[in-house]
Length: 485
Image (cartoon, rainbow, N blue to C red; front, side, top):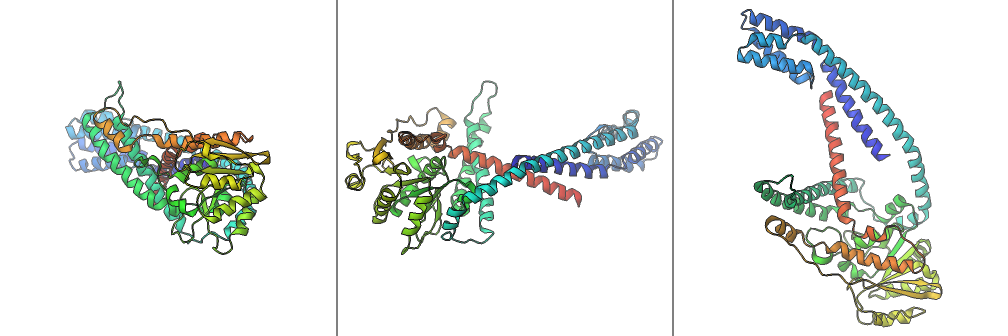
């Protein structure tokens, strides 16, 4: 529906511009006759007619966007400038007929655009009916849990999110432009070799655009993030409740593997994986000025948060708990084991910090024996799911293969050294692979779970192109408004 609406608007704006062009071009035959008459008088020796010839040429350039009449007038005026009057008169022959032909072509084009606009508008309406019905149904499914968390979502001014969404759009466009520029600088094809000067200039321009986009997105993205209630209503599926220690938020917000200019944090990559099963929601840390990116946040009171967590456990499809410090987190784990079916809980354990494995074995009905599993990634080392009778299925995160870093010489090596290796995607894939294997061991199949883990850069590029498309539509609308004036 969105695509057809976008195309409909583009075609409608083009039709509006053509309608204005037809209005401006309506007296073209009379102008053509006046131009030819001025040529005749100028050829007869009336030098004052030169101004009328130039005025006629200017009118056709302004009001005839293309066509035989504009080309003929331009050629004829050029011959006048050269002093070749016979050629000018010959080129202006049948000018009025050419103008009428151009008018007919413009009418045909406008008729085609009108018909296309009508059919596209009908198609948009046809798509809108089921889309709105599905949206209403989706919101109805999520109404209970959305109503619950809406009481704990901060209120923002109505303009807050649109303003920062617009800022994010500019950041995505800059980031995408910079990425394309640096990629073009290092691309070599046998059929086309980029001049060295252009290749060298693309590098600093691309890096400046990348840096500017990165800084804008770093500031605007947390401010444009959806709250938990909005995320639930937009998706409609049962949520995935993400529980963790607030003390781990700083680590979760870090960009993995130290790759420069990557804008997706560890939690964002994790949430991208879990969205295969539903919208991901989490309790925000009390007092934080802006929500961390990843799971959509809501904020519970410090003295009465347990009943809401218990209710959300019942309403969620999965409970994903990252083991860490804090008695509240261990209470949540105990309640999940006591009140929820085994297949609903997914544990993510860090790289075996002191005491975690021992305490986890004390809480679980059947010990997971993590001490027998070699430590992997310090943030997520293993994924654990549970079968009937709380039988644990432990799946370690695979160790990262070695990376070769940047290779090559000159500009290409400089770009790769600046942008860094591509191990962020493989790190996310490894964690997603462990979760996928753990879920498969209890009979849960996720669609594209691993692929979702490292699509962050692709999503960034997609948003950059979407922002550019929206800007193009806005520019066309401004063109139409200016033409109407």
